[in-house]
Length: 212
Ligand SMILES: Nc1ncnc2c1ncn2[C@@H]1O[C@H](COP(=O)(O)OP(=O)(O)OP(=O)(O)O)[C@@H](O)[C@H]1O
Ligand SMILES: [Mg+2]
Image (cartoon, protein in one colour):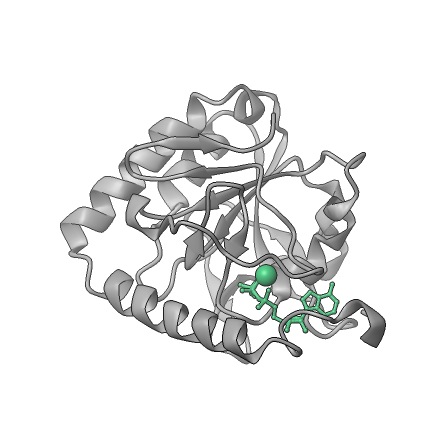
């Protein structure tokens, strides 16, 4: 991103401080959800996702390996796999710092930890897909608002990797955030680099912001 495109966070310390505090509060709350709540949310997510027409159409679906109290999307991915879809998990792109690629993964296959300790599939690089080749992506989030703005952990990985989706004409892949309903906040600032979500699935609702 060019310096000229960076008016927001850097130039607005109060917004940056607000987001930092919000991340901390919500991540603490998320870490405190019980196993039973997480399990129920994970099962609800699988059911809710499979009822979406965009899921039925999708051939290549990516999710994430859960950490830090995030809702486990693996039962949803298992359903996708059982329905004959190819499933992917994100891997750090070795050529481009801060960007993700997607490696195929079959439920049950072993994973290995990357340098941040995050589990990644072991599939060889020639089988990886670039973000634009996917049909549907499940993204973890710390918070979201009523317009689909997403607050992640703050690394900007998803924003960089799906920056091409900021163009209104580009509709694929569908970007679906996953979180608990209480992670919805009134309003989040949206920086120039933020890629908005098409929908968010929670343990209770389907929030749709753009047609999928
Ligand atoms: N397209 C981009 N080009 C360059 N830098 C970017 C881009 N997208 C995001 N960034 C950088 O990433 C940093 C973090 O972004 P942001 O706070 O939106 O993270 P996030 O969306 O919460 O994180 P994540 O997606 O990793 O969960 C920003 O300060 C910005 O400098
Ligand atoms: Mg962002």
